[in-house]
Length: 424
Image (cartoon, rainbow, N blue to C red; front, side):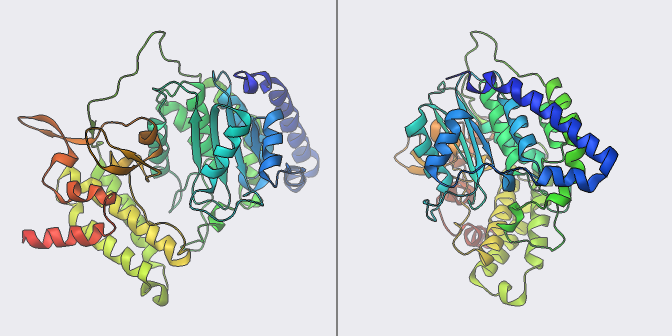
């Protein structure tokens, strides 16, 4: 079934062209409201159970329900189909509501992805639910060197450059980058390709007027807020994506695991921007929320981040970034106490949140790592030493090594503050 997506791409492209033409006619003769109605009144894909999702994926490997389609689920479907064209392994995408029979769990998307794989066989399964705290990408049957780490790094960097006060990538934007990676054998996405996607009106969730929106409500997209952009996107997005040709690895090229991962350039500025965002969200809490347990933990994380942000030390700048993420999660937990505390990948905290637990190479530690390192361990975040070359951060004499940037402890902020107080 490797050609499942490719074989069905042509009808979808024809449908998109006809649909764009219909929208243009609506605008010309009836005005924008009629065009918006044409976009909104489409019959949604019905898949309320896992079994119904499976049956849909047997016929069409992409499922996008309206609530996850950024105002136009058909357009979202077509964009994903284009991104997946040429994949050598079956690719399945589910952007939908949580199935009726799936109860509240820490990782419902992962739970469903496993069930889908059991029924549909090996492939890449990207699953994201409106009610889920995060998406999950399951990879079965791909080459051992297949890696999504660079894809998620590119997504986070695009999000940091995003529009609005609190830029937040849409579920569709994340899915498109993952699917494109599947079509290019996990190759690192070209910046121009990422920028092309990021410039589309569906790439980011619209900035809401209230300072801190409910985490779940943020993922609901008001059709009117994106309708004007969708009308344009329906006509131009295909041209833009068609220019971004898939990146193919050279024949016979062997992917090598890097010996180290350096701290990215501009890390202090990136950390400052994230900390400013965390501080604004924290300041928007009510008095009662500020004195809650999660509110106090957020305050401590912000205080610790401020202490290490401007030291000029590379590892400290990464720590400030992680502490800012920790503070943001605690702000979320003020209103959603069931959410898990933020715990980063031990291998490299810049990989994002830990999703798996594995035995780290050369160690007896079962450590929390990101999904990519769970499948194939990457290189540790490292710093350059004048004599010894590159040194993994876990070998340094720092609070970051002792805590794994919070991957190994639940009180990172407190330990950082204690460490800095002891240095005085």
